[in-house]
Image (cartoon, rainbow, N blue to C red):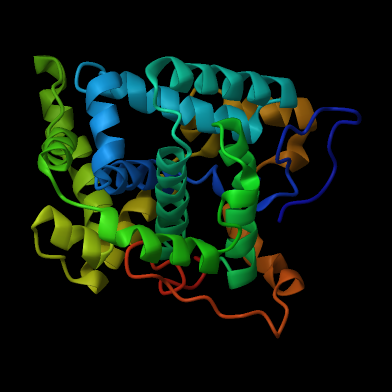
Length: 308
């Protein structure tokens, strides 16, 4: 994890530069993970029904995606007050819409954490099992802000795998899930943006879908693509995205990371690939080697060498 000089007395927020979350959430593969999470979340019939009724995602898909990204950015890189205020707004919306059922909130949380962790590791970000466990544990802070009791939220990759195994029988690829699938493949856009949808968005959405576990592909009624092919495509795509300078990439969502660096100093700059340098400190020899569950991701499988 990144360490170094920060501005004295500056508020690091809920995570801070010493966290795994701070380092990982700066990587552009998070966008692919976010879309994967939407595909996975749609397989819970009750949760997706609530989305269909209340969210209006079909009328404002891009706005909803950007609001979600901004929420994650604020929780990760904003001040403590800003993160707590963002959480309070989300909890209020959940109450007003009647979508604050803890079981459903837990499903949405776990599907997102699993998706982020899966695509990060599969795309080549060097995460030991200890660092992956720390990330899952840190995300219980985010769970609290959306209205969950952290004590009931998975705190390790093993606990996350058990959760997916337990909830697997309740998942289904029903009509609502297929509506989300079709929508994510081809969201409505103004005519001027249709070429970009075909060239960029469709490829991102397809790649995000292809990274789902085999169980999800079966529920959607489509054959799973060859795993090695998906991994190569994911690595190649994120390799290109990582070549875009951070100061440019980090403007979407607007300015969370640059503002955090302005607040805390240049040594707070996130560096996901620096995690491997310090991984041995957190990896105890006796740590259990966690394996993936049947219904979630398989984040321990996709270790690849650090570029360069």
